[in-house]
Amino acid sequence: MSRIYSCGILGLGSSLPEKVLTNFDLEKMVDTTNEWIMKRTGISERRILEKDVPAHELGVDAANKALKDAGISAEDLDLIIVATETPDYLTPSTSCLIQSRINAKKAAAFDLNAACSGFIYGLTVADQFIKSGYYKYVLLIGCEGLSKITDWEDRNTCVLFGDAAGAAVLGRVEDGYGIMSTYIGADGDLGKNITAPCCYLSCEDIEVRTRDNKRVLWMDGGEVFKFAVKVMEHGTNKVLEQSNLTLEDLKLIVPHQANIRILDGAAKRLGVSKDKIFINLHKYGNISSASIPVGLNEAYEGKMFTKGDNLVLVGFGGGLTWGSALVRWSK
Amino acid sequence: MFEKVKKIIVEQLGVEEEEISMESSFIDDLGADSLDIVELIMALEEEFDLEIPDSEAEKISTVGDIVDYIKSNS
Image 1 (cartoon, rainbow over the protein chains, first blue to last red):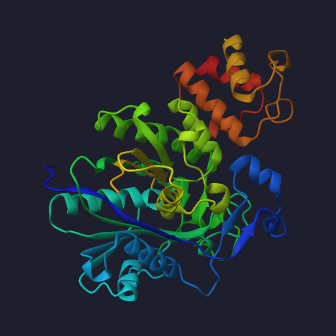
Image 2 (cartoon, each protein chain N blue to C red):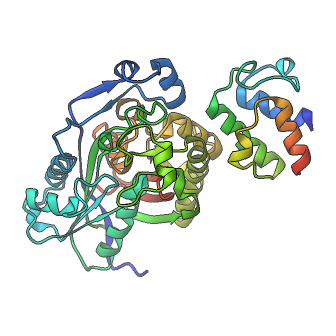
């Protein structure tokens, strides 16, 4: 597609619940140990929303921070995209709830569900709107309340997830900077390896769940692990190739944070040293679509990259879906 | 072929070659966990250019199980 404008990230923000749930807390809830969780996941704690607080509260907070960082007002926004697999309502969408709260009167708003790849899917959509000139400012938020669909009696999954939101304001940047390349894909044949039912429950869905609430998240970890390691390597290489760059040109890879073993496995396959891969999953666990923007924001605030540095953002998850983007930092 | 499998097990699980026999159980003798086995299967799939479906992978518990599977499927 022709590119009239270059699209880049103008501002970032993230929001995490205050309540911390450690592995030691989980030892009291299910048959598990801190050591078991650390060895198999690398996660030591996660942030959890209070039961009566909806996930979009995090989205509102992250959005306001990203707008401030970008130096624009909510009224300037043309579009709000929320990537989420845990919307508070099926309708109104989380994006409409946030639009109202931040007072973005002019903005159109919709949600997009590509699970843990949602932020990259959203980035790819936003890029089309901005580079074509159709819109000037798009707010993209990965917003998740996974604790609300977690099976707290299933020790295989309840140790993995947390709640969070991460936001990015996207707009025009100078040529040669910003989003250089994106790549998204899906393999629905593998879809049933991660399920969270909504309006329909199959016998299989009922059978594998331990709780009275059968609409919780369930996952076949082994199959997803294999997929994730391969696709993280493939996605990273794909956007490098599309941008005519190599691994040596990269400053940092900010991957979806699901499991340290996935990141170690992918690093090995890619042949990159681990210090080129941003990691914060020990603090937050798997926060799905919020993972990449929260990670990127943390790396940005930690001054891990500066203007002109090449970054790869890469996600994978339910669907099964994957996505990657090469971003040349523009501010 | 056993030698090739052994080499991959040494690389993946970080165990000594002498510890590995056809009877070794991955979990009980070689200290592997479920994710180690998944990673091992991925490495073997690449080395021997085959796909080990999840239903088959679940049945694998010893080194001999893997060697037999590869023998009859490659």
